[in-house]
Structures are given as structure tokens and as C-alpha cells.
Length: 158
Image (cartoon, rainbow, N blue to C red; front, side):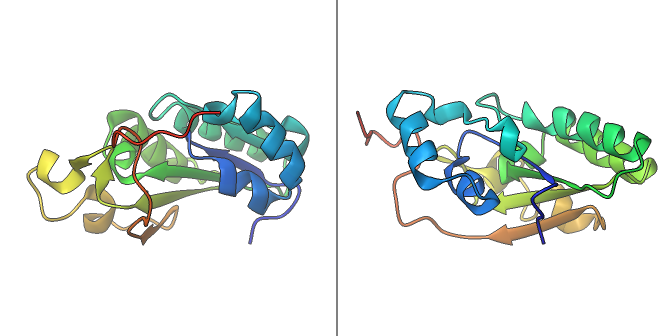
């Protein structure tokens, strides 16, 4: 559902979002090899990422506000992890987007972990906020990674 005129904002794991948005593979590869893997930004493709936990979330709301004010048909897609979705900045951003009916969708990628910490254990809850309070602005998917997560003691060095 993401069009070429839409914005995609994501976290430090932005490689696949950049590729799905249409950034050429070789351009993504060059950025990774150049050491900019943690915050891939391709403004010409409307892809912005942030290595700061939750850093992309309020920026995505600001872009959605600008798109609404300009009366464009563009949409903003904001990807975040399950632990980020529980932070105050994410909760406030989602609520603001709902209240002002901004053209934005928050996509929560739920692997149940924040680095190596079980997200639901941290919050001492069997469910997360997005599972309890449904929002038309939030979609989610759960997955289990086949590869080590960041901080797992296994690093790829270029």
C-alpha cells in the first residue's frame, strides 16, 4: 500500500524498508559498507531512519501534519519495534495522530524483544498497549527472527 510519493520512517533496522520503498540495492549496499547502516536516509525516496529509539516517531507525526496542511494525498508510514511502541513518545504521537486525523499509519514490528530483553516481561504484562487499545492508525505483525538480534554478541564487521 506504500506509494512512491508516501514517506517511510523507520528505526535502525531500515534496510528492508529502504529496499521495499524502491531504493536501489546497490545504493543501500554502498551506504552499509560506508558505515551508515544504522541510520539510512534517502530523502529522494522519502525514506528517513533514526538510530535513536523512538526518534523517528515524532518526526513522522510532523511530516504527517505537513502533508495534511498541504492537502496532499501522501501518507506517512512509521515503523517501530514493540518496545518502542510502549514508550511515552510513541503513545503520545499515536494519540496526537488519532486526535488530529493525520495521514499516518504506525506499523509495530513485534518480535517480543528489546535487544535481548523480553518486552512483555519488562512491562510485567502478557500484552502490550497496542494489543489492548485498538487504533485505526496502528497495524502490527509478530515475527521471530532467524538471526541474532543486536547486542547478541555476534557482530558483522566490514
